[in-house]
Image 1: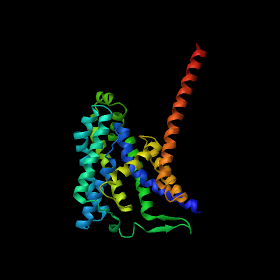
Image 2: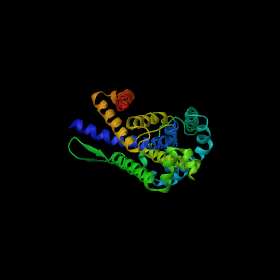
Image 3: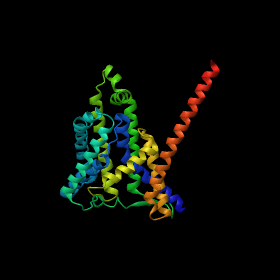
Image 4: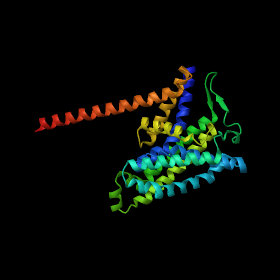
Length: 303
C-alpha cells in the first residue's frame, strides 16, 4: 500500500505542476514563445500576495482578487513592450528578452525583500497541513487536492473558452496563421495581448499555490520554470490536457524516486523527462521516415 500512497501523492503533485505549467503551455501554443520569465513572474505574484497578507491581513484567496487584475495588466503591457517587438526579430529574440526579464525580476525582488524565505502557509489556517485519511497508509492533503481541482478547472475553462467563445476562436485563428487571420478581420496583436494577459492570470494563480504549499525566495522562479517546462515537454508543447498528463507523469516519477532514495526526488523527475524527450525525438523521426518511405512505395506501385 505504500507504493499506492506514493502514486496518489505523485498524482496530486502533478496537479501542482500542471497548474504551474498551463500558462507556459498556453503562451507557447498561441504565440510559439517560450517565456523564460514564467517562474519569476509566478514568484512576483506570490510576493504581492505576501505583502497583502503580511501588512494588511488579507487572506491569499481574497488577495487573488486584487493580484489577478494587476497581473493581467502586466501581461498586456509585457506583450506590447517586450514580446510583440522581440517576436518580429525571430524565434531566438523572445527567449533572450524573457531571460533578461527574469534576471531583472529576480534581482529586483532580492533588492526589495532580501534572501529570506517566505510562505503563505501561515495565512491559510490549517489548510496547508490538514488531510483526509483514506486508509491507514493513504492520506490526501486538502491543499494538494484543492490544487489539483483548481488545475482541472483552469485547464477545462481554457479548453471551453478556446472552443466556444468568440475570443477563443480568434485566438485559435491567430495561433494557426496570424497573416490569414488578419485577412478575415482578426487583430492578431490584440489577440496576442489578450492571450498574454490570460497567461498572467494563470501565472498569478500558480504563484499563489506555490507560496501556500512551500516556501519561496527571490530566486525560486528558475527552479519552478524547470518543473513547468518538463511538464509541458512530457505532455506535448501547446497541449492543455497534455500538460496535465505531463505534470502527473513528472509528479509520480518524483514521488516514486523519493521512495526509492531520499536523493531521488529530483533525479527521477529529470531522468523521466530526458527519457521521454529522447524517445519522442527518435520515435517521431523514425515514424516520419517510415511513412515517407511507405508513401513513396505506394506512389510507385500506383503509377
